[in-house]
Length: 397
Image (cartoon, rainbow, N blue to C red; front, side, top):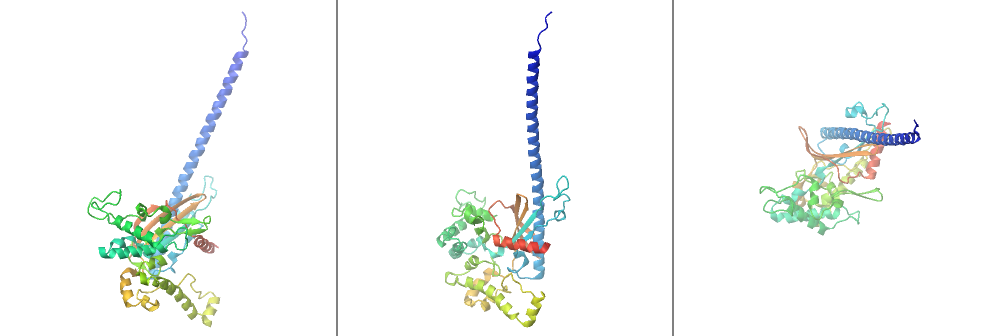
């Protein structure tokens, strides 16, 4: 009986074996790739949870600063500790109550989390509900005051600047928006189910206004991030009782407090805050104080001017504010603040999370009015960032 050659069978087996190996390699690579992706996702989820915990830690630190500030003084000004940017580049596991917060699987130290805490005085802003607070005949005047703010808040950046006419139109739109009801709707937006005005729950709702787009409401940057163009959200609020803190309010907000003929008094308020510090430093220039300063025992506060201790100080310290102007101004101003927005940014490597809280400070503690992730353009000014990082380096040396 003749024996068949096995060469063809052996060749076929070899081909099948090679195909099987090739398929196994593909499956192995796919499994390894999927495993790496899942590991990466898991790691990102872990880091995201860590950043969330770090943001919560930042909130507690901010509340502690605000609590201590109220214990030290009844006044609020730009000299207070809460006004400075707080940077923590030495965050430890204990800070977020997690033993593995900064450690990888092998127990080796990873990149540390850097925390940035920035607090804003909401009482330093214009409350847009003021547009609808007074009687109909006076609302036109309040819209004009708001237009003054719009005209000024980006004066230093001509490419982004708006005019008084823009402000007038935007103010009219905001008034229509916050007073909308089922009989007076605003565009295609849902109307309230009752006669009660629709109101607002978040400054971000200003994006419903036709004249306001994200480039106006939120921060912008120029020169590759070297210059901050502030967004309108830094100048308007919905959370306060309408009173503006004259110790913390910027010029555009102060200007909105006055009638057109008296707008120049806003700059005089700013000058009075700054010049008061210069006068104090001159009074402290005696030989004794110079000696104490040289020893580091009596260092002057370099952060800014001396605050007004009461609103009546305006009549004594600001030329041009007499009884008539003061009587119109007094109901709308204060030297104390009770509502603050807190921005906390946590960074680890290339990952970043920023959260925002609005809190009301009272005698019994803090009430959180709003909490949200910051998903809009918000930037810390470069000079403020540099100062905060320098302060942080000084703390940890």
